[in-house]
Length: 377
Image 1 (tube, rainbow, N blue to C red):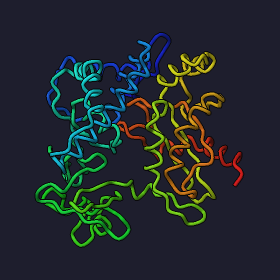
Image 2: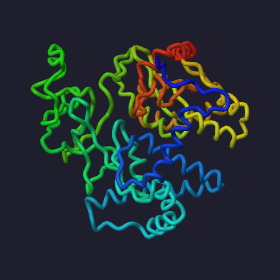
Image 3: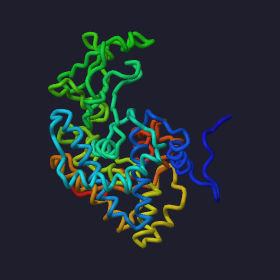
Image 4: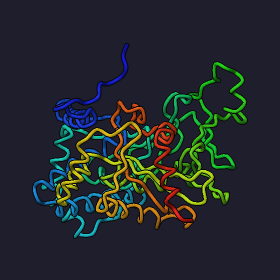
């Protein structure tokens, strides 16, 4: 009987570390021209470039290259509406310089022939989309579910909009319900579940209820705002979609997943699932050998809470940035930093590298309860 992947033993690398190196290395071997990816893979490729720059002691230079790539990606997006738009001379010069220093090498790491990437399965950070477009590898985003036979919407070359998953594909209609739920009707939408009793809840006026929250812009492009089932209703009756806050904190290279918590509570807290390799490198660079030693151990199934003062202070920065972008009622008062298995074989992670929120919150409930015991409203 197969009980899943074996736990890493002495001298054996953790599964998630081995997989990550193989996935990135596969680009150079396969040399694709087009590839379907998940956002986390793109984040790992960028982080690999950051790590190489830091090891070469040119981290600040690469940060400048990152900012330039994002600015260039935004410029290219703006030219879709105004083809006559020209970049500033400074931006054009920086882009040319960093292309020689970094961008060509990154394209080389991805096989040197990639013309387009198609991202799906999870929201793509707009800044990450601009970054890859800026280095010369544009990313197309799309949206769909099993019940819609995969794609229901998709961006097109010539109309890439970071943060949007595009307009409906031909033969498909998108409508937004009064409560913000995305409704889909079209040739790809399935006819019903095996149990007909579930169809009454699955369909409204012939439209399939996706369970996702979204909005349409003036051009009919869809932007997703989260999952309806993930809405948090606080004790005061405030409805909070956790995904925007979680995505903002998740941009930190030290965080693999952020989880907002607060259903029925007086205020919000969060669990930050750490990216072990990134935290270990940060700890070693910062001289926190005691923290690096903690990260070398295998965490328990429910996660290991790390209360290292320097780490918590470092994580407070992305938390503060995320809090600044939301209302006071949506801000997090306390968080816990957890070392948890976030490999593809983890019971908390889907094959597309998304977090199984309910499974994680159930296993780590005592960490959450401890946050509220220590919190003062």
